[in-house]
Structures are given as structure tokens and as C-alpha cells.
Amino acid sequence: MQDITQLPDGKIAVGTANGIRLIDTTTDEVGELDYSVANPDDINKYIHTLYVNDNNELWIGTDGGGVYVYELKKKTCRQLTTANGLPSNTVCSIDKDCKGGVPCLFGLDQNHGSTYTQGGTLFPQNINVAATFNRDIARRSAEATAYETRAVSVSWTFSPTLDLARDARWSRFYENFGEDCYVNAEMGVAQTLGFQGEDPNHVDQQHVAVSLKHYMGYSVPWSGKDRTPAYIAPAQLREKFFAPFLACVKAGAHSIMVNSASVNGMPVHANRELLTVWLKEQTGWDGVLITDWADVNNLYTREMVARDKKDALRIAINAGIDMIMEPYSVDACVLLKELVDEGKIPMSRIDDAVSRVLRMKYRLDLFNHPT
Image (cartoon, rainbow, N blue to C red; front, side, top):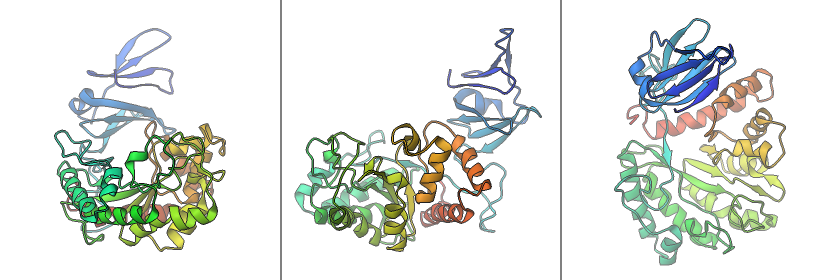
């Protein structure tokens, strides 16, 4: 069994290796969903997500056949995306020359070599790379990692890590280039150029986009524990912790991942001053700001600065978040639309975020080479 969800009529939809079973809890009768238009062979084998939205549609996520939408009232099914993430039977409205739809962007934590690729090349952790004080080693290891990452149709890495490691209690000390902001900046720029190549506007098929992380102050938690609050003097925050990110932004970094915790009492995912004013407005950077794992949810489950998920989305998007790393549910899409319809998130903010994401896809040439 891959997933289970309750339908509006009270029946339970259960994803299995042989299709989607419908269980009537009042009679214990078991039925089967009729896919009609969809290709049942694609759906049956690889179901991993079932979700019902407010429009009485059952969304069916698969690992090998794309995403399907089953309209419960009409009892019809359509394929929303194909196996490679492209919209099914959709003509791209963004560019008249684009006939395949908008390609998906896939990313991995390739932090010290091709760590998520079977048989990939591994390199020393960044703390060891920093100990060499050799920019060429940093760049060449990133180049090799980019080559192997793009070879498996992944065009984005959540790397390099630019946290200033200044507390030995912190469990992720090894991921970055040590305590010094200059060393972090120099090594970070070397890896950014190694991953992306010389021209950030035209990334070829042997390179990938970077995601600098974790913006910022992530590495000096007051407790020493990962993902917990930090308290940093404003001058230190601006002059030291910001410096490596600024250097890599100037080198053309395509994206930045945000600190999961809080700095000086404010969750960074809610901090418009750090996300929009410092990073976007004052530098002119036109890249993508992405959350870390489930961090929008953390605004209301852990940080307690939002009432619920919808309120957390409002806070994060308005603060400057462009892309949400949401591992558990697709309801963020529905809630986001509601927030725009209600005027709680301006359409200009959505346009800006979408422009940034599309810009990165064009720079990676994904419209011509989606895989």
C-alpha cells in the first residue's frame, strides 16, 4: 500500500500495487476506481500520493507515470504531467516556440560529490576542502560533481554550504568551510563557478545550478543543536555571516536555501528584512529563494508565529520565499491560490516568484533539454 485518503462521500481510497481500491466503511464493500481516459498501467504500478482537493478532484501521484487528476463527480481521469514532469497535452503559453510545456526542476544534496548517485564520485567534506586553502580543488571537485549530477537528469544541487562553523557542538560542522567568512566566500565562489560554469545565464549540459545554504546564521545555534535559534550581533550578521552569500551572489548563484531556524528571535523564513531587503533589493539579485525541508510548516508547528499552514504560507511568501520545499502534502497549492484570491498575497509577489523560477529554468536551458 502506497497511500490512503478519505473521499468526500466517506469512502476510503487506498493506493495498492494493483490500482486504487475504494472501501465503503459503512458496508465494508470494496470497489475499484475506474480510470477511464487515463492509462491504468502507469498508475497501478507506482502510486505514492493520493490527495483530494476542494474541487472534488483526486490527485494521483506516481513514481513512473506522472500525475493524474480524477474528477470524482464526472468520474473521469486526465493525465496532468508525464513521467518526466512535463504537462500532458499542454502548449506552453510563455514562449510561442515552446511546445512541450514547462519542465520540472529536480535538485539533490550533492554536497561532497555525487552522494545521491549510485557509483558516483565522492570527495572530502567541505571542512577538509577548506583546510587545503586551495580554490582549484574546490572548483574541480564541484565541476566533477556537476558533470555526474547532470548526467542523471538532475540540474540543481543544494550546495555549497556557506555557514560559518563556529560552535563545535553543532552537528553539521563538517558541511561548510570553517569559521572564517573570507575562506567561506573564496571556496564558495570557487564551487559556484565549478557547479554552474563561467556563464550563469547559459549553463551547459555538464553543469548544474547551485543553492547556497543556509541563509543565514544557521551554524551558531545557541543550544548547539541543529535547527534551533541563534543570537548574533547585527554587525556580525551583516559583516561576517552575510559576506560569503554576497560573494557567491556576485558570482552568479542561481538560488539560495533559507535557514530553518530563527535569528535574534525572528524565524528567517518570516524575515522580510533578510530575505527581500538585504538579499534581493540591496544586491539586485534575481535568483530563487527556496525553503528548507517543511520549513513553512515549522512557522506554525514549532516557531508559533502563524495560526496554521495557510497563515504560514502568507508570512513566508510575503517575506520573500519563491519556492516551497513541501514534502508532505500538495495542499499548499490550494491554500496559496486562496491567499491570492483573498488579497493576502499580492499577485505581484506571485509574478516575481514565478519569474525567478522560470528564469533559472531558462538559464539551465531546460526548455530545450528537460532531462
